Length: 156
Image (cartoon, rainbow, N blue to C red; front, side, top):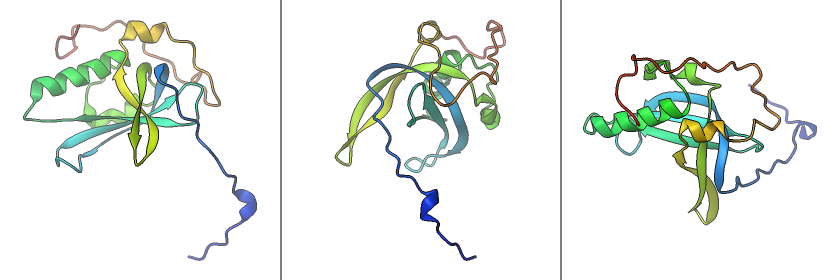
């Protein structure tokens, strides 16, 4: 296939570094894959950040050698985003859910990058400012039913 590049269709973009602190985030993509370093199953979750064009990523390795720690991390994620569908093979159903995260900066290849330091508890997420930016969440209706006894493990 031949392609003719049209320079008029190109616009240079820059992405502002997301400041450190607490931010409202929304799941833009969630995929089940394999960790390149360990070879274990892993969730890769891409988040949009309110007010910014940049995205941040979050990874949960599904480690059969560390069941309790893996379930703890999953539980924190599920609770922070009010997710009640726990089947990781259906993670695409989580897209659009909102929550919050503490962002910190880490240096990588000589440049500062925004990284998720930790997810915020649901109560803190609810206190964050409403979504702002070019993307909207009006079409995403959050599930506001309280967590029931079907939650597979205890979390505080």
